[in-house]
Length: 98
Image (cartoon, rainbow, N blue to C red):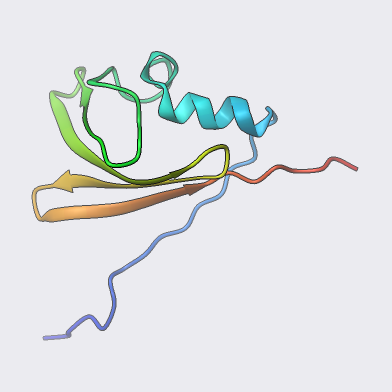
């Protein structure tokens, strides 16, 4: 049996051609997020707060604990899974077009 020395990690990046402030707001404000990701949320993402996200079409939900928020820069959460919690971090970077 192999023992993990550190937690597995995955990294993905996406270019979104919108202002950082608009993209950040889309992630923290469920009125916007429900238009492209989950179908229902119990509230806005705020540091120290817990919310529930539901994907009604799949009959799936998760509890989300907001660890840190840096306005227009970073969101750090933990979401609940059957095996414990998964840490998820989004970093928002302004891009300068040439």
